[in-house]
Length: 283
Ligand code: KIV
Image (cartoon, rainbow, N blue to C red; front, top):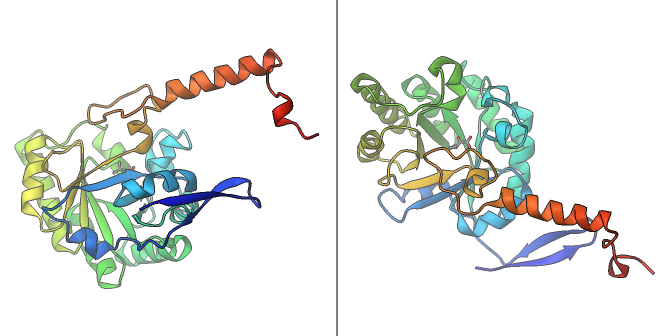
């Protein structure tokens, strides 16, 4: 599959004119249990979505954008308006991948009805296909309520960053037998409630494997297990945009260093009056 880029003179930005491409669907993802590994990355902007789309089955507009894009200390402060603005941009920039949008903290936990109102607004205003929410057994009635009303839900168990204030940090979960059993129950509950897929974040490996074996829907791991049905990373982590490299991250590039070098070269060229040259000027 190829994407042709032409210059859209109304915006002066590369604007893709894709060949007809059918977007993957939520049921097609749900059927991938035990099959070809599912590839998911986060995306927050239209341009990044354009670049990632052909490589990914799922693009997640994660509330990690609070930290990655907005420099917030936790995801707790992320608003619904942020998620909708970035979600719509990612849908505009993608053609093939299923776009999933995180429901931000405080926008869905109070009741299934609150979650429905929020999720319906997210799908209407962005064009995305599904929402993701954090939480285990306590969120199962909400997962079931949304799924029964036509809103596909990706659930998220294990380390749930929106609960950082209750958890006390971002350490791996499931180290004690009791905690592992609770997280396994959580995973079973949201899967049985109708989640089409399940993010398993930051758990000890045997638990990631046990969850994958225990639930009928695909699991998508991040710091979980090689045995998950798919994997996800925050795209900026994968690209090497941050100095801090958590254990579960592999850097596939070192873009922070490359941006630093490019900015230094630009600054040097401006100061030395080597940029612009005649080539960049209008005669
Ligand atoms: O917000 C996010 O980016 C996520 C992924 C890390 C799974 O939830």
